[in-house]
Image 1: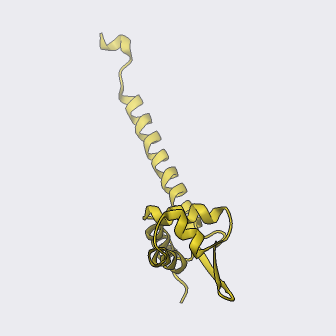
Image 2: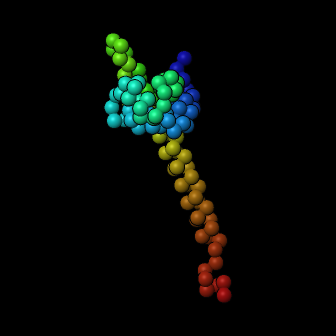
Length: 116
């Protein structure tokens, strides 16, 4: 059964909750990279980097490709869209709420002349 939209959003949000994983995503945005290059990017050991990459792979953000003895990682196009969609809808909702609040506050405020 395919993951629900909420499950995909949760997986992506959990994956980017760590600064080293965000650093890996930023590096992979420049293009595919090997494990050793990625470990150097975050200044971490290969086993620690592998754990971060495993989580990014499980969440669908990163793809792993093995060619001979070389393993290359790359970003999956569109994988951050669930987070982008959520951020946009949340921004629009809060913007609408704040606009309504401003309109209500403006309609109950007395003009300066009447306050004196």
